[in-house]
Amino acid sequence: MAGWLGALKKTRSIIGKVFSAKTNIEEMEVEEIEEILLRSDVPARLTMEIVDELEYPTRKASRRERLTAMLLKELGEAKTFVWQAEPKPHVIMLLGVNGSGKTTTAAKLAKRAQGQGLKPMLCGSDTFRAAGSSQLKLWSEKVGCDFVGGEMGHDAAGVAFNAVDSALEKNCDVVLVDTAGRMHTKTPLMDELPKMCRSMNKRLEGSPHDVWMVLDASLGQNAIIQAKQFNEVVPLTGIVVTKLDGSSKAGFLFSVRTELNVPILFTGLGEGEGDLVPFDAVAFVDALFGDTGDPESE
Ligand SMILES: Nc1nc2c(ncn2[C@@H]2O[C@H](COP(=O)(O)OP(=O)(O)OP(=O)(O)O)[C@@H](O)[C@H]2O)c(=O)[nH]1
Figure 1 (tube, rainbow, N blue to C red):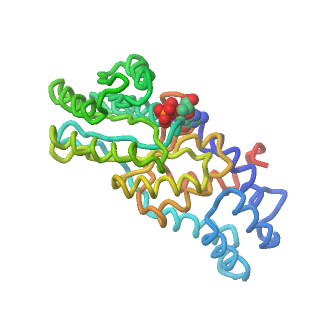
Figure 2: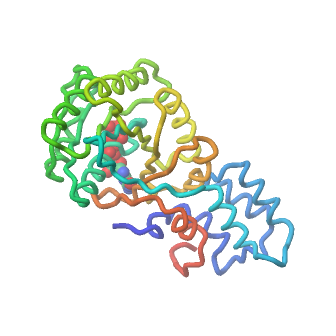
């Protein structure tokens, strides 16, 4: 599994310049720091605040310390995700635009649940495309867990209902509902999401208990625009950031708390089933800006 450092190689190749041994942030021009932060999609407002803060030397703390503190503050308090024991099953719906990594994330989460002694079910509700849920079915075989899926043209809300129903019958602890990828601008497909929620709630009151948006880190600030629109249609309870390993725009994570006020729960650091880790703000900031001595970051 890729670690934080390796995963953030691309963003580090830009932002890491601020802290690399060759270019000392304490001596850099603030304009240069500003450009580096903006290029890696750190929000403009925060970049301006950082620039203002760094412009004036203080004897109390170095620039590096002040920048790190500001960034950690921006990420806010970490929220550790815990699978709920009651009511059972804990139903989590995964949303996102096409190709953001929902199916892979559902499988990775099923694997994590299994690792904690829980019995997961995967639900493939992508009835929009031919063989829309076949990839998830393959994953369920690989992970070795129950699966409920729908054929093309079926009602996605009905598939989700059936999955919850079957999970209750099979005494599953967790249901991970993978949804069809949809653009946040396509109204009919977006309208399907609350319908799916109502349908699951009919079978198990209170479900889905969580609605997580899966954001592709390579989209940078655009991911925030998408998440805002999804959040208006179905209130989100968490964010999973995928493909952090291939992104040069990981700075957009600093927008999540202020723009969405939804916790970042997990991050995908690779394509394998073990490549999903709880989001760790300190490790993230350290990997981006820390003095790690990692030669690849320069
Ligand atoms: N490098 C990397 N690749 C990832 C990660 N998560 C997913 N992928 C890859 O991204 C591609 C799309 O992933 P899927 O899980 O199929 O995405 P999806 O959102 O389900 O796609 P649609 O159902 O078509 O909307 C696949 O090639 C995955 O292997 C990650 O964290 N890192």
